[in-house]
Image (cartoon, rainbow, N blue to C red):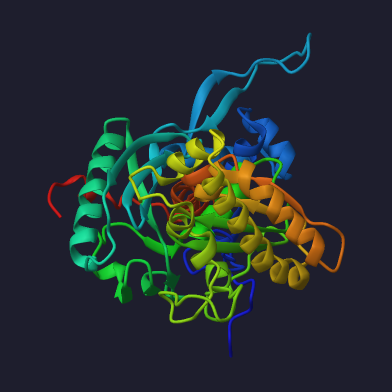
Length: 413
């Protein structure tokens, strides 16, 4: 039997806890955390009122969360209304110390790692620029491991410990959430990242566009519940969010927008097909069409030249927007999303991509026009989505957080 299309990733938030007394306790711990996260600092009594438990029950849960380093007390709560009688309760807040989500990204031309605390703040970060194309996975992941250890060590100085590691990659990831089945722009095939990365904490590997789409859903307060997220670096990826959940497909490969053919007899693609969207709207394709040489800041170069009125660059971006519109038309007609969101590198080129993209969508879409917006997260989306996926897993099942991760502070690969 195949898995449902909306099934959560094996290590993602939203897992159903068992209907036992222990499972109920774990769910209530999560409810307390999510309430404090959503409502801001508040007393035990306020939390009890919001989630419908007794003050005594909530106090027991809060004490456990404080011992685990997930909540902290800020001192007496400010009165909500003048003249309120009785001793003020102690305000609770998510801890700025304790568990942290470690996010990592393997890009075609960079590696990046960050640590995010329970409050959603980035507390440590490391980046290495340089091509990974054509390199075998082992040396790339050794470098990534060094960056991970560097970030974990910096976070430890702030009182943070890793609760898990999530890695964004530009390729197809198996449902085991650790094996890269195929990453054409890296030339990686059937690579078990779990065997090559630190194993002291839980590991989740996912497609970079999926993490970018989840970041948009979680970090943008105005994000719709149904949208198609388009992310780009060298290649182009897509993520489909339906009713606030990621659509994964039977094998977990849904959203491969970059390999949708827009001209079936077009140039060969690294995926084995021809005329794929990446051959017309990927960064390198746009640079070639504009007559520019690839550099370290490709998007910056394109944006600068376009802003200066370079006709070749503007034409290349206009043609890329047309190709994007053709590819997205199929997704919009099939799924009827509320919006299309441009993220990744594409967000920096939106002023020159959007007119032709929106024109193509309006011309080809069967139903009402689909709104197109630009992500405020830009290229940071996949990395932030990866780190926040760990934080959300902690929030969803705080009882599962243990003392693992200390060994990541060690040196070496």
